[in-house]
Amino acid sequence: MKKKLLIILASCFAFSGAAHADDTWKDLYVTRLMKLMSANPTYTDIALTDLDQNGIPEAFLIKKGIQGGINTGITFRDNVLSTIETPLNVTGGCLEDITVYDVDGKSVFVGKEIGRYTAEIQYYELSLSGNVLTCTRVSKNDYADYAALPYRDVYGDDFYTGDFPDRSKLHSFIELYNLPTHINVKPATAKVSVNGNMVDMSGIFVSESNYYKIRDVAMVLSTGVNRFSISWDEAQSAISITTGRKYSPVGGELSGDVDLTGVSVAACEARLIVNGEEHTLSAYNIDGNNYFKIRDLSELIGFTVGWDGASGTVTIENN
Image 1: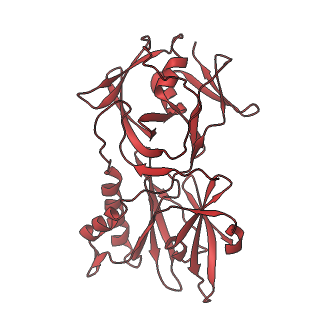
Image 2 (image 1 turned 60 degrees about the horizontal axis):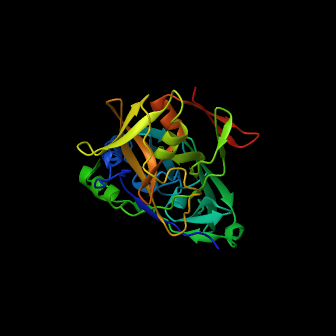
Image 3 (image 1 turned 45 degrees about the vertical axis):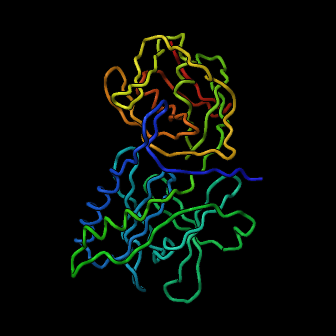
């Protein structure tokens, strides 16, 4: 039986404090869309869909009609807004009606549209590799044996007042994207070694990356030069880290496999203060524990991370 996850979208903290959604992407999207639509008012439709499954949707500008298509796309990752390269082989309608299928543990996005020169419904598998959107023609029957997953996408076409895009209409449209999307989270299968010695550290695997609890990382590094202490800064609602200082366990570190059955998983932005300097990292919160990308932590704290593909092992150097 497939495991069911309740997916929520939030700002998260590992210790305490209220959660507040980070809406930075919304204002950036509105500003960029205003600029693009002012330069080319024939692009009247917008689709919001979270193809990279980071909790923030991509936005695609679409021109309708027989000569129409997807004009451009924008995405927001790691606090950076960037442009998506879009294909020419679709009308853009495939972004209006998307179904997400669980195909052997992988989320596969399938959109449908009416072809340019026929009344036939066509299906496309949608994939986002880096900043390139690909739409591959498929058959609906290809996914008949797979379960559909909960998913949220938004489509609209009323954004102009007269000949000019209306900022308030764009804001209202972006705000419609306030429900959770599916995030394909599963227990990490990678092994972990520290200085060549295997350690029993469980994590999660999301979007081709391994994420681990920050306290577990502190625990396995506690005897080396890259050790660090962790505390909760109540005044700044942030995780406080001091490198070179001994870690004090609180209980529950390295406590075994991650059980995702029936739990809430939150894509979020977490604040960390490392040696007095503030940073924000993308993370996932599972039952009150923050899971961070291991490479992000290595860059902040100073230890070295590698990947041994032959053995499927995350390698950590703590010398």
